Length: 435
Image 1 (cartoon, rainbow, N blue to C red):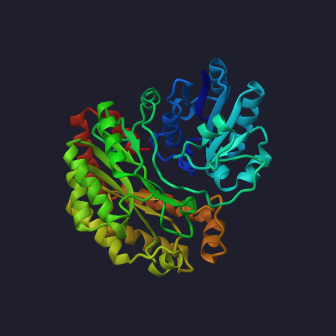
Image 2: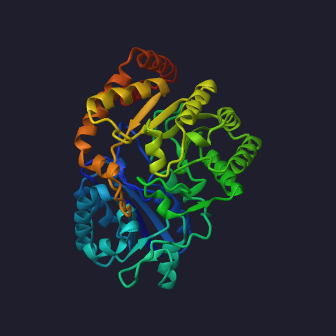
Image 3: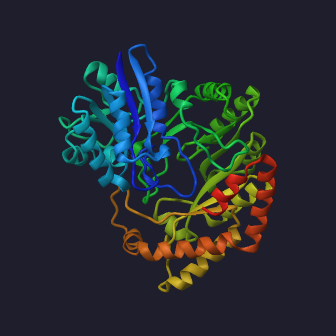
């Protein structure tokens, strides 16, 4: 029996590395390393003994993580990696390979997926890169010596990876329940992560997710996993699609089968404002949606269109009005500086804050633009955002303070505090409000 270790390596700062995206962690949020969770299902066979170490959630140091791994003595390691912590990851991989020279090391992550040749030249101790975490590529490579979903240094890279379908087995139950990942938005903070699609069909020029391609998962497979998650004790659900509800007819079909299953979840998701209409929002509310994170990015419609994000500002306002109507809390994802057509940044800041106040979301997430791996752009606006990121970080900090300490927001949070006190969730009050 071969021993395989699924590893979320340590880092000097809180960070997420999964789904071919890496970003800093904001607040007291625990996020499943979804690549590893999905891969665990492929290795749930008598031929493999599967182990899982999430050094991020355990807050392990390099030495503590290495000691844990050495005690397991794995034959194969699949580790996450991320562009924003590349230096630390590479240092750790060097130490890992020195400590376990015979272990076969594979990785999954944004910098490796989008720039594999450069990554392997830098890290020759890594045998291969998993190009599609929804596939059985790693298992196929280990068993047969090759797979279209595993890239090695002997190959030439094509940015187009053939995604024929998005179907994966149920995760290994021991791996899925090994750690308790928590988010403060739920009545029961421990939650389960699920995907209904891979990648993204939209081609926003500031984002690299569309470079992965796009594939939908069969609705019956999703319902099967919902049953499995519920039987495993979960009633809180994070739908991890980059963009949920892309296809209205398919989504309504999913909602209908979900309703017939009589499975009661609280759930959250990411989506686009122009996808939301009354029928979808009403169904989502009836099925227990407790937060929609909506990509807004900018108040400048012309800029959005230039970024291939063909969305009208009136559609954005309409979406947030619908969420309020059906009592679904909202989070507006905004990119400070995006579409700034004003020379004076102070004037821009006032205009952006006024836009946010009129939009009236329950939460805001202000994300500063940075060039993602694999993304090629010569757009002057994006280059300007990157070169003045420090100024926009300062703007984001000031707007965050104004937004969350506004009397209207304080009253809403006081209402949440009363609710959380009834639930016995005193700790989450401080983790969420003051993080």
